[in-house]
Amino acid sequence: MRYRAHQNLTVAALPSAALWRLLLGCVLTTAVFLVLSFFYSQLCDIALPDAAWGRDGKGLAEATTPWGALANLFLFGLLITALALVLPLLHRRRLRGLLGPAALAVGQAGRAGAYILGIYVLVSLLPVPEGLDILPQVPVQTWLMFLPATLLGLLIQVSAEEIVFRGYIQSQLAARFSHPAVWMVLPSILFGLLHYQPGVMGETAWLIVAWAVLFGLAAADLTARSGTLGPAIALHLINNFSAIALIAPHGNFDGLALFTFPFGPDDTALLMQWMPVDLMVLLCSWLAARLALRV
Image (cartoon, rainbow, N blue to C red):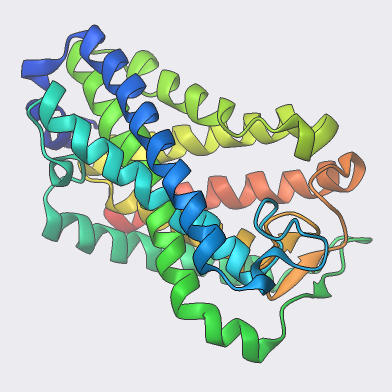
């Protein structure tokens, strides 16, 4: 495995590689994020239009309206803020150092993103499995009106997750442990467990966790091979744009989706039918990114 480029992210972590610093950093980041989230929720109550809550009043909680979905996406900006406050205190690191060299990260994101986008275009041309015909959701005019904010919100969301799990946790563990089984697998498992929502996903909750772990491993590998978060952010952004802004499961985080699948996140049978396609897309996207970057 060619992980020499990972030093771009791990060298700065070496002076503060003690595990207690990482654990305390995670606790403090979570605490600051929760405090900021409380004030954010109060601001949403005041500033968002009534349409954000929808007819059933769950538009914000379940992200089933455009404003509700955007509020959930922009919430992740507070996670970036929280980590930015904690990093200098515990690790004497700056947030931008978690991304890798900026120009390199942007260039890698562009190249990897172009190849990954090609995979999604090819998949969109395949016949839809029986029983999975998509349904219209947000009117095209409304969708286009919200599109710039959607793209910004998605960029904030995926960047926050990649910065925390691949930029921060992975680099700190890699500075302490040399074996990828530690610094790739542990953050990916944690990333997967944070997707565990039995109240929303029902019997498929652990299936979603397993998928998220595999996604985390793909993103971790790309980060270590490229030495920046650029490819992982590109992979994450295109995946989430497809799953949130293009075609979303019905009834959960579909407020910005142009279309929805004819099933919700708790529909075990249909989700199991779709999961092999999702895994194939993830595998092909990972390979496409590696091909684009020659890593």
